[in-house]
Length: 580
Ligand code: DMJ
Image (cartoon, rainbow, N blue to C red; front, side, top):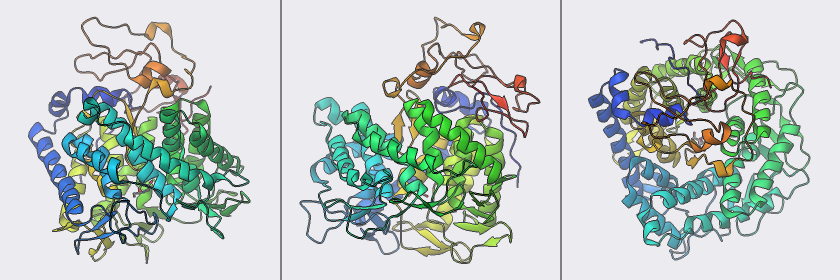
C-alpha cells in the first residue's frame, strides 16, 4: 500500500473558505494536484452511474415506498428505526414516506439534475402528509425526513425552475413545519430531553420507552434550528437547544457524556461511551451548530468535549470506549460509524490527526474490502455478530473532507478504492445491496436511503465540487447541505487580528467573501495569488507547513473563525486548544 503524503495546506478550516475557493477553479486544481483531468472525469462518471443505478432502481421498484430491496426488486416501509408513514391518495396498504426520494433531492442538485429535482419536489408537494398513525424514531425522522425537506426547500428557492415560475411556494417548508410540529410533544418531559419514539398523529404513546441515546436527543439542533430560522417559529430551536443544554449538564467531571440515558430522570443508563454508535452526531452537531448559528455556546461545549475525547478515548490513531466517570478504557473496538471523526477534525483544522486516523480506517477497509461494522482492536478480528457493511458513508465523507483540506491526490485514490469496492461487492442488477457479512461478502436485501443522500454525494463531491463554488454549506449528519448565512448568525465574535494582516480587495478580483466568513470575520476578502491557496483576510498560516509546533507562537490564526490556533501536547497547531 502507498503511504499518504503529509497534509499540505495551512488553510484547513475548509468548507467555508478554502473549499469554496478551491471549487472556483476545478480545472486548475486538476492539473495542480497531479491527478489528471481525464481520470477525475472518469471517476466522476462512475459515481454518477452509481447514483442513478441506485436511484432509478428505487424509482422503478420501490417508489413511493421508503427504501429499495435491491436483490428482490422489492420495497420496504418498515424501517425498524424509522417506523411507517402513510401517504394520502395512495392505496390503503401503502405505508411509506418516499423516504429515498426525500433523501435524494439534495444529491440531485449536487449532481446538477434540476429537472429530476423539480419532479421530486412537485410529487412530494402534492402527495406527502404526516398525519398518520405511525410510531417513528425522532432522531431518524429528524435527520432523514426533516433534514431532507429543509435542505431541499432551501435548494428549491435557489435552483428550482418552479420557483422562478412561481409554482414552488414553500411547499417543502410547509411539510417540514408540519413534521416538526409533530416532534414537539416528544420534548414534554421533566428534563426537556425528548422521547426517542413518537406517534406522528397521537404524540407520545402510553408506556413508551424512556430510554434514548445521546445522539438521539443531542443531534437535533441543526434541523430544528434551521426550521425555526426559516419559519420564524422559535419553538423548534428552543426545544432542541434545551435538550442539548440538559444533556451537556449531565456530563461527567471528565467532560464526557454517556451513550444511553433516561429522559424522565435525566440519569445515564450506559456509562461506557466513545465517538461511535449512540454518540457520534452529538459531537458533530456541536461544531456544526457553531458554524451554522455562530453562537459561542456551541463552541464552548464542543471545545471541552473535543479535548475530553482526545484525552480519554484516543489511543494513537484509534478511538476506544471508556467509562465516563473514570476514563478507564472499556471496549477496544473500531466501528464503521467512527469514520466520520476525521471529517470533523478536518473541519476543525486538525488535519494531521484526521489523516492519521483516516489512514488506519483505510487499512481496515483494504483488509476487508469495505469497513466492517465493528472490529475488535485488541484481538485484530471481526466482532462475532456485527460483521455487516450497510453501504455506510462515513469513510467516504472523511475522505472528501481531507481532500478538500489538503488537495492531496492520494485521497482521490482512496476514493477510487471505495468506488471499486462498492461496484465489485455490492452492485446488483436491482441497485446496491448491503453486505451482511464482510468475511463472506454475502449480501442483504436492503439499499439504505443514506446511500443516496450521503455515500454517493460525498464520492461525487470528491471528484466534482462545483456545487460548492458559490456558497458555503455545512452538511447535516445525513449529508443534506445547509447554507451558512450571516442572517442566521447571532453575533460577530471578537476579531483578534493584527491589523497589518488585513488584506484589502484587489480591484481586479471579484470579492468572494462567504456569508460566514464575512460575519465572523467582517474584513474577510478572498484573493487569489497564483500558485497559492485562497486565504481569508485574517488568516495567518502556521509557521511550519507541516503544522508541527513547539509553542503557541508557531501557530497562526484560523482563516474562517479568525481565532488563534495553539500548540497541542502532541505538537500540532489547531483551533481546539484556542485560549480566549
Ligand atoms: C446516517 O443515517 C447518519 O450519518 C447518521 O448520523 C448515522 N449513520 C448513518 C449512516 O451510516
